[in-house]
Image 1 (cartoon, rainbow, N blue to C red):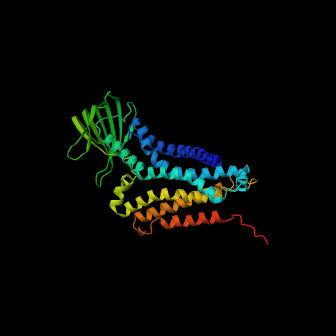
Image 2: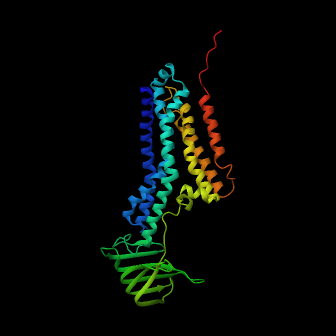
Image 3: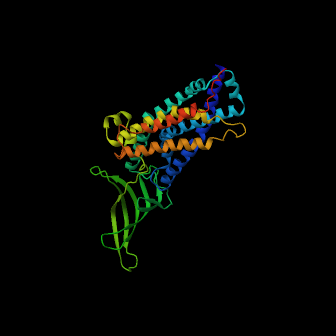
Length: 360
């Protein structure tokens, strides 16, 4: 029992270290995208922490299976290098017994992945969408930085000052390009003493209302332009989305996907289940791949193992895309891919198993 607790601890410690590194890489990439949106004025910087927090389950559901796979490889590989696994085998610990022990941390990871993929990830993505939608509907300028030119949609906006409650701008400059049908593009520059935002309750459109200013319309190459002086002028603002890479099905609950029955819903549902199914299959493949020659080092089979995992995940993604487009029947779905890698795992697990000697 002490030996088995030691094995489980080695797997969990190694898996935690690998998961931490992978999370830093994935979260760093996502943070850069959100930081770019904040710098462009699409979202306020104060939302970055909440957006990253609600995206965490979607990171974990992908990172944890890979981290467990690499954790078993590295932990058991070190045991083989130190000849500890040889001692365990000599003491009667068979491969099947080792597999049963390894399935304990695998069951823990499978439950965590199931909680993320079936519940937490869609809830987190939906919450992110609500946060961004609520921010876009707010009549404030919390995403603008005074004294800096910022691109919002297809316009460049500059303001000298934003009031404390972020409700009004002072000394506003707006530049945009407009092209009418069959005419050359026009450059439009608008200057105003102040401005505020308002929403149209009927259409849901948002307008930037400017006060006491001028509007200039010029065509490049022409010496004639138009000048309009106004007391109040409303500019309709284009809505930008920072979650355009997320499908609606990804934000639906698992029960809603089950009731939907469309191709995209079935595709998303099978993908969520597949992330859980692949955990024990990865363990089955990781056990024989962790067996290394002490002369080769613990990383000898790391690259082939990663290629095997990436091919598994890539085929699942291809099947998901085919399911969503209706090119693959739902009753076939992703299950042949799991069956293929299960066969590969069984082959690797049984290959090279020591045979019993026959006494003559």
